[in-house]
Length: 452
Image (tube, rainbow, N blue to C red; front, side, top):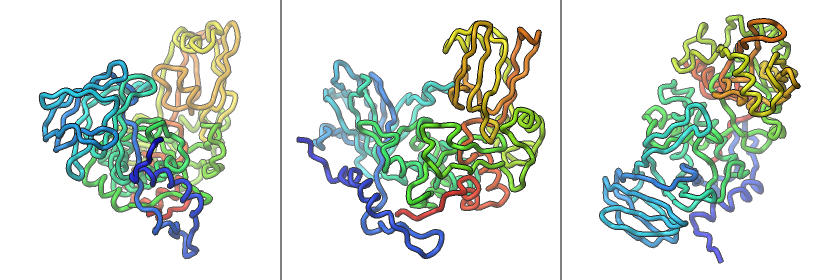
């Protein structure tokens, strides 16, 4: 019989308590959820590494090696190198001149906020920026055999400590304070939603640490400013219809945000994003970006929207994302499409349906032997390697019209476009907007509530 420790009982009960107790006070738009006597800051379990046969770590403070049941196996003083390897479902730990073998294990700091370094942590897996780097972490590391084989590493910590590692990873530690605060509230909303719904959960974790949920890099990108943003917004989250809003965000919307139903049909029940797609500005624009001709004009124009580097001061990393161009030979497009379906040499690329931001929902690649139709947004982008920055693009050709030699993709934005445009949020902060104004702009159907 499995026993649930007191540490874990909170997390198992949290969704039930929330569902039964989600009651708002009626005193103003920022009422408080009446859970203060029941729920304090929760823990969250973050999957750091999915599967590996070898791990190298170095303690930065004193840590303790334990069994999963809490029995101490070994003290690990500061600056102790640790080597872990897995073979046939057994983990071998070499540290301090000793060697032990365990089926699973826990590494826990001997003092509050103790730090350990993990070497070569993979990130961006499956994307063009895939790489690995050394990262430092706090919390309680649980290391088990993954269902995929090899070892998985899960870091359990307090919610606010988790957010301190998310905010600078997602929007950059040098962003202005109000943008950092907007990111903190959005990230907290996403994490609380994940705890309640199990949306990103695995057998031993509540959320991931990469782009499939939210980027979490431990302590490596934290600064006093990013920590301040988390602390200043402690417990604040976005609420829509008595539920946590899944607070999506992307690097650059290209001047217009997108409706969730056009990006993730499987998430179309999330009504907090219905009919909230907007031009990223205070003024209205005349274009209907669902129409090809209007989108072409929009991409050529220099509109006054927050994420436009020609109109506003944007971070250097964002300056090339507002408008972009990719050129492919006919052979390159044909090869990319053939990996999905062989329709012969591609002779045309035709948008069938677009969302309000101009992002394609459905596209046809017309070949000499047939047609390949696909969608939605991310699927279209991932036809190519590396993927296109967004699906808000038009296509021109060079060469004979019936058999082009080149395809020129001209587009706008980087990412899905749902929710907060991080570039726009930074500009709004630079121009004096508060984090509440930023969040109201990008999540107009949500309210900010204090959860704990």
